Length: 369
Ligand code: SF4
Ligand code: SF4
Image (tube, rainbow, N blue to C red; front, side, top):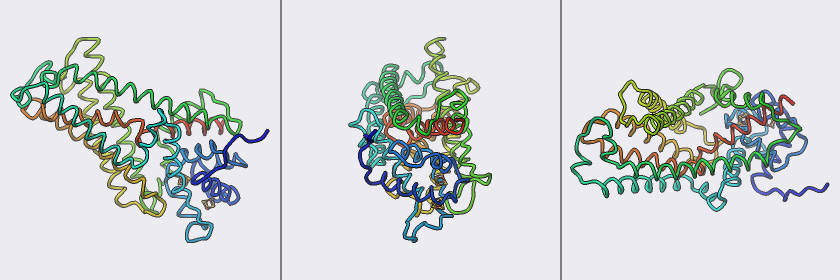
């Protein structure tokens, strides 16, 4: 049956060339999940290459050992090519399609979302309340809503969040449909659990036991540790918001809650994780070797890490100063940053979590088949 795929261009063509070279060489087969997955294929379709690019976590290990890396004429640079291809994947499967251009100059897009989120929340707060209320000290049940009215908090966040979740699910489903089921893999509950486990533990960032060659050629666990802080910090903050929503809507317990309540404990631990993790990852980026990286994509990573850092910093400040006159302004700024994150969830580096999870599930399925 003739192929229905269009001829490959650009990064796909380069990835195809590299995988053909690597499949003949196979020196790196023990390095990560990418090379064994590559070896299960003889030829590489567009779906295969997008899958392999998302299975790669950019540890740079194969670049440092490669005898064909630049300045060799074969010019093999797998982490750089796959980093570019991953971003093309995010844009290719993004929903709705006309927003896929947000992945170009993504640092600027995230900055604009921050400006919009801040303008909206500060504008709503200062437009709906008088200065005595905003700059006054409040305490006890409902004090947040005294400054930022309930409707201004719930409606923008609810609508943007639901849209963003739908966009991420549709994008992930498109990626799965285009890439899964190759190499004769059958999906099973064990494969799903295996992929989820690899994601939750960041198993591949452990390398062969000594960590990754990131930010430089020396092996280190730093990236794995800071990524764990970021991921689990984010999940704890999400858990805090979810529990607070149940408290409010199911039990009628109105925020702010006590320091030992579940939403505050989750939020505090999550905020600390989201402070340390992005700060550490940003610090590693300043030391990263530029050769195996795509310079144009640094803005995308930095913009998201900065946004997560600002969310945690303002959230923790709000916790400490919630009974002072600074609470109103801090709350509006914090909510502005959170709204910006909701805006850009499906059109920022955040989507790498979905694509990596799906690629790891597929990898687990292929290993079991
Ligand atoms: S990256 Fe280089 S050393 Fe590793 S498998 Fe490919 S060609 Fe061989
Ligand atoms: S950069 Fe790391 S994860 Fe990516 S293909 Fe090379 S060794 Fe594997």
